[in-house]
Length: 147
Image 1 (spheres, rainbow, N blue to C red):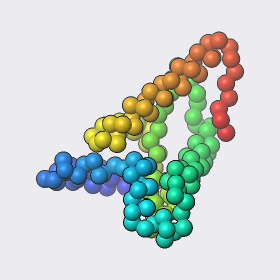
Image 2: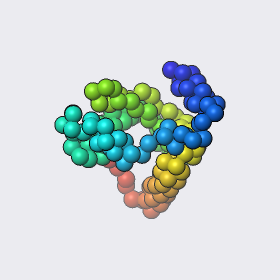
Image 3: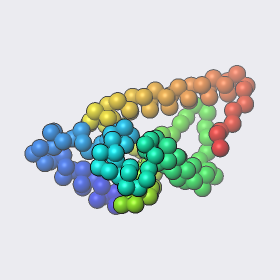
Image 4: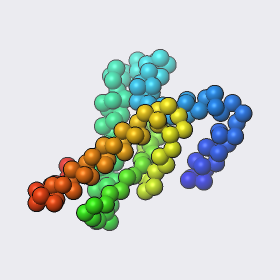
């Protein structure tokens, strides 16, 4: 599967018109919601107008939480260190959400506008959380992960 994903990406990048459509290879949540609305999926499936930001987002969070809870004995926290994971999801024709894989070393390439916008924020927020937790630990403040 991983080979297939990489191969598809390699083929896309070699297409002579790739530079013209590379921004369409990754959508923001706003772009996806607009697509669902414009193509009639929101009406056809009886979705809320903000389905992407509510129901889809919640389902993605539940899947992520399930994965991390099932692996929590293998995830040993260490002061001053953190891991950043990338989760790949897919929607089927009925808009069911499927978790495809969890990447322990997600690509942080900003090859399109959406990634140029969101990746710096993700990194900034991740580091901010790590620094806050480290400062609390040094100060002797107990921290507890959200469940």
